[in-house]
Image 1 (cartoon, rainbow, N blue to C red):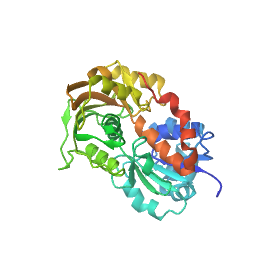
Image 2: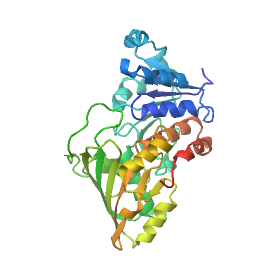
Image 3: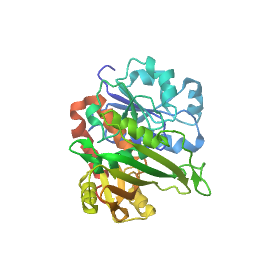
Image 4: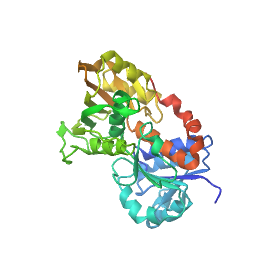
Length: 352
């Protein structure tokens, strides 16, 4: 066991399921010997999904008290929770209970090199987004929070458009996150009409700007950011409206050139969300576009020399998936991270 590299994914939802698929499909290229995944609740309606993940090479992990119920559904259970955690090299928590699991399990686990949690789990560990603060990430950081997909989107816009000479040249950034009601795989939670969100944070509005602030703080930047959120009755993608006040003059052509030159930005002439979502369904991995943002170029405007306004779309968790993989590969072998993550280049689109 000491020489085995094991990735353990907790949760089989909208981030967990494609991550399990990615790790099983690319494990030979990424130096992974075994992929295990934890499912909390035995459900007959999830049987086909679980069996498919097992057929891909994943090994099912359940809580001891629910083992018999999983067996009755016909699943082959390989490990129970505590056993799988101690065997793991890296644990990727894709549930909304990452901080609870940290207190209950992870802090007392001696086996894993590192633990990751997803965007909602603020305070879990050092915040991370691929391409934003890689320089301050280290395999010695045992707990890492992969920020939310909308925070990825905000952050790549800021780094692409407001960076000058390695420093941020931003007076203020304002954002409206128009969130999809639920995922296409969800049978519950859809809404009949737009539903405005609260400004729960007195300084940042919503967690999106707060998390982006703390992400950039890891590289020594203190940014003036504010975000609002509204939920829309769609299942396609999140939409982001942005209004950036710069400390330098710019032009519309310069803004377009910066976005087109960033390999993490997918530019498009399409403005219809369903066309972009459809492209991801047909050409992405598990239907996901792994770019940080999708930018409809025609929505951009520069109403004054120091202001940039526009819309963009947040890929369906694709940016969070890519960051989760990068953080995992850093724990496995930091020196080979860039070489190994190149396997995903076909799903990081420059144009849609």
